[in-house]
Amino acid sequence: MDFIGSKRAVDEGSAYVAGGVNSGYRTGLRPNPLVFTSAHGCRLTDIDGNELIDYFLGMGPMILGHSPHSVIEAAKNQLDVSLLVAGQTPLEYEAARLVTELVPSAELVRFASSGSEAVQVAFRIARAATKRMKIIKFEGHYHGWFDNVLWSVAPDIAMAGDPLKPIPVAGTEGQEPGDNLVVLPWNDAEVLEEYLKSGEIAGIIMEPIMFNTGGVLPRAGYLERVRELCDKYGTLLIFDEVITGFRVAPGGAQARLKVTPDLTILGKALANGFAVAAIVGRREFMDLVGTGRVMHGGTYNTQAISMAATVATLKEIASGSTHLAIDKTGTLLIEGLREEFTKAGIMHEVVGFPAVFNVRFDLHGPTDYRSAMKANRERYMNFSFEMLKRGVRILPRGTWFLSSAHEIKDIESTLGIVREVLNAGI
Ligand SMILES: Cc1ncc(COP(=O)(O)O)c(C=O)c1O
Image (cartoon, rainbow, N blue to C red; front, side, top):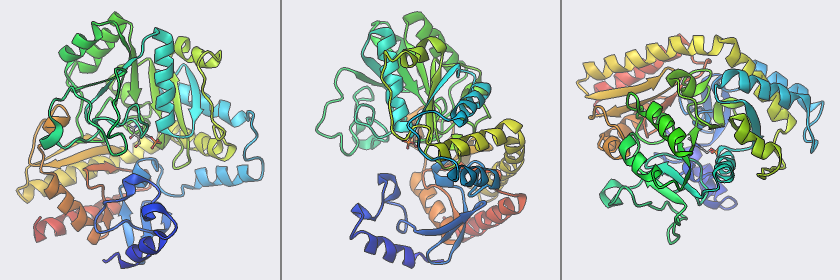
């Protein structure tokens, strides 16, 4: 397979679109950014006519696959009813009710249009609730692209220096994170307590399972300890479940790992590709937004087509059928990958759950960002590129997303291609 047509289209499009792409995360992919003409089920078709089995899934949202009938029908039907009313529709109450039924921490819901902005509401609530300013985030965790949190996301370890010193990402260079952002290594409750003792921390935000970089599970007892520490020091615990939400379990990582945060950020799989995110949490904190003491706005919040799609997506997830299907195919895929890598003599680790997991080479058992970065990432990137050339699109960073549209035959085709790539050598 080649991707020449995509390259040409992106080059030509660069005359009108900065860099030819509309998100900074769509550049830098080998061999070049791709241009797609359609997407159905678990397959993408690109402008070169290549058909690819897709494990990007829009970077996570498409948990029911591309163009699932129920979601598309709901969105199409709503197009004839209303689009944007600068008011409420019954759909958003139904969507919110479904979220509260699925997600343990969700006593109240506020919808937003992207995960990045929902994170900002969480910070505002934590600060208003505690009358403190500082937020703790962890190295290697991603919480959207806004200045106040785009620090120490994926620093180059060779250059990174002190793990407690926030490291800028492109665009925040030359700024100071200020005293309001503390960056710590994740999975270390002792270091965390040292900082909480100051009594100055409004909130702690984390990916409860680190999937944006590295793929690391929390150590046994870590999340429980963080929960205890937050209660002890009057700090709000914020889980960013934009990736893990509805994937690790219908109720997210918090349901599976049985630790309930004060606030949760949701997005991605919440609406199967429509621009919907949410902040949800304990009534006493969400009431700060409810009463207007904490401002949260957005012209496009609860746009009716997106809400119709959200209701349709959540109904499918709540029915249990989505996870039933993915548990079967995802388990087959994870076990198949382990078998193929073992047969090929490649030291590897597959970490996660059927609907979202991470694969790394040549490293076992990292516990935080710095240790995870010791994996053989170049070898994995080569592997992902060889997979792409044979028709399987996986993220070069190691994350795999699965949908209920992936069938056993797609998993078998994928594993066949893995075998082919490994036989050819990586
Ligand atoms: C954990 C996490 N939080 C927040 C975000 C930002 O969400 P959005 O891209 O919808 O702004 C992302 C996006 O990938 C994410 O993975």
